[in-house]
Length: 239
Length: 239
DNA sequence: GCAAAAGTGTTGGGCCTACACCCATGA
DNA sequence: TCATGGGTGTAGGCCCAACACTTTTGC
Image (cartoon, rainbow over all chains, first blue to last red; front, side, top):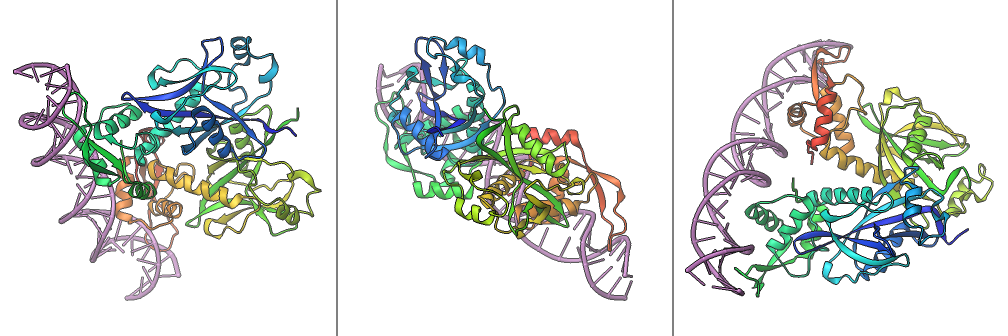
């Protein structure tokens, strides 16, 4: 009995938000132009959720994280082995990829500014990539990423999201841009503000953000208690 | 390399609707009073979705089925091995359950009347059980069932369901009772009818159901084309 | 004729959408 | 002073929830 569960892995779609755009954390493989999602295997002694937390912690150095399992990918040929072997021949001896692997997909929301990206042994870089500049990825990772994004959008449409994605203090336009970049469309600022304020999940502070060109926007903070209530009620609804 | 993927299984929560109540298909183990969900292992040569279809087909003899993967259960100790070994000692030699298993959960919606329940080699009966009369199940199957039901409710709240659960022709009260038994609460019949008719997913036939005591209800049929459109739009919203 | 279930309309309130102008700031 | 982005209110329509009586049928 090996130390890890055979033929089972997990992959993480790690979302961050910066510069008004949604970003994903990708790994760049050594001596190549190939990218993939962070992932790993599940130890015999840890739950799959714990394994996801571990992988996330290894790549971002974060430990309090919002993580959600969204789908398990179990096609017989999830990707073309020959293509992978060719692309990674300089790194991998041989039949690492001989057996079929089923992978559990998780997505995570993290505070961009608190992340220290960290490559693993096969990769030379771990970096944020704009959601609409994601290149072709190794394995079936584009499919996993897309499904993860779809799941995030669905969740965002019915539940508050942002506590994990925004810094402690943020402006209403920040939050709106976050919603816009996840949903991939524009929202009217008046309607957006009304809707968010009505839920009571944020509190306006007596401060404004200084040093920005143009009118200084108010700063807000999440009311975590209220936020969790709304989560449970399943309130909030964006279409 | 064995014929099946080690340490990975799947379990199916199979929902049917009859006598105004939502039912689940359970297996009763030989010479005992123990029940479990139908499940199985995944062959090396089949996708996990295909494995779920196979399991479902083996238990119900149905082949065109509505199936949805809803969660993967991956705790280290999903259930107490000693308890299981004791409960099933008359059936199982020994260390079948020695290795930890991760299980992918699927739920299915089937037409009660078209199902021929079929036990497997460990079980003596395969039978429908009312959703609120489900006994304590083996393994962590109560947890799986509950999560499956929760997922079904969520889906039902935002998308039409019924094409797979109701017979070809059905009455509006039938459909309403189906919704009520899935959501676990009463709905106003006028509002229900208005909402369903507005979507256009059903068509009223020029027939009534005869032979029932009291006023004869109209029969309806799904407009499958429109049904699929509404599915894609994500219309329909029950809270 | 009686008991049981089916069928049916209206009203009020809340929520969502659409829409445009003024204000504050840094350059 | 100007350019840029932030901040704000109202009106119309739609959808939802609440609510009760009449009709039909089998017995």
